[in-house]
Amino acid sequence: MAGASHPGAMAPPIPGPTRTAPPRKPASWPSHPRMRVYTLFGLTGIVYLVLGFLCLRIVWALGQGEAAWDTTMASMSNPFYIAFHWVSLLSVIFVGVRFFRLFPKAQPARIGPLKPPPRSLILVMLYCVWIGVTALFVAILMGGLFR
Amino acid sequence: MKHLLLRLEPLIWLMFGQGILIGTILLTGWLIVFGVALPFGWVGFEDGQALDYSRAYGLASNFVGQAVLLALIALPLWKGAHHLRHLSLDHGGADYDPVVALSLYAIAAGGSIAALLAVIRL
Image (tube, rainbow over all chains, first blue to last red; front, side, top):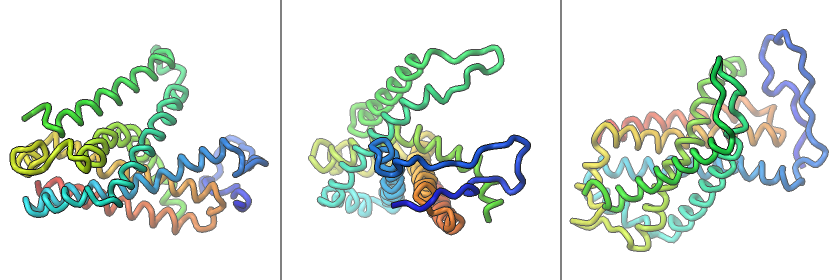
């Protein structure tokens, strides 16, 4: 069971002019299904952190020369890497779906005279960019483009 | 330390937000190729194949390739670091937050510097 929430965890050193209520932890924390999904979303941080360093390893090998590149590429067939990459792919899709659903709701109602497009349109645009960039990335890396 | 972290919060939030948005968009294709297609033999790295050294180096060593690779490495590190810090806060780790935050951001910063060096030497 998690400990009590800390009211001053993110408080500024000098209190602002606006009075705010102290944060309260929901009674269902952390066993409620929505809280579990929220925690799972946070845990994807581990995957992203490790994945960043794995990408760094691949790019570093590219800078070291052909022998290092070939060795690194061959190591991608290691079962450990395959399993981690599958977990990573599921994590990235989970983060994308959850974040893109949140993104339209987080837009300001108005910026000066401009209003944002409808939420559904923003969501469709985000998915189009995600799918389009992924398809482009895969096409380039698999030799379909710039060959 | 807490004061410094609060001053850096907008910058860290920027990197975190871009880590989720740009990191997720770029990582999906990367994982499909290096995590699925390569081990299953749908793409190869021998001479003349799509991921052979000379082609991969040619794709990565120009300005666009370097910028994409830098974003691909550095932004997910900041997403991971900031998300894990807040997970720690949410689960009662506020008393240890300065140490946790500093450690995680140091890992992300170190990885980002290494990423910059990695793309510069291409």
